[in-house]
Image (cartoon, rainbow, N blue to C red):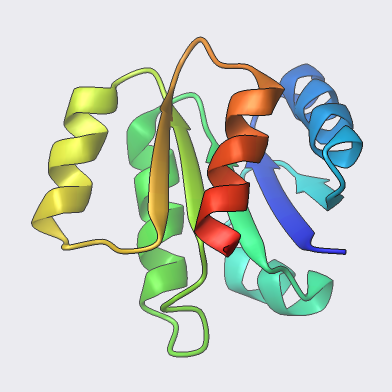
Length: 120
């Protein structure tokens, strides 16, 4: 079973998204916004990361922290954002790979499909 680390700064959304991802067959560990994201990736043995922070720059800073860690540079990441154009431009400027953007509003099945594609 694939292990997903979900970082979401809204506990209610994290709970709903966790249920949806578990229903899709993933094992999910949810946490609030934290600068200790790399430690959580290791601790939870995460196969992928989902970032859903209220501001894109919060998700962006966590994405950068993960990608700058030598052991996590290729970790698949799904970013849920309310500013998809800004996020897309930002990620393109970084030549980011193994990343999928999901615009808000979103469904759990959209996130599960994106994870499935990234983890193929």
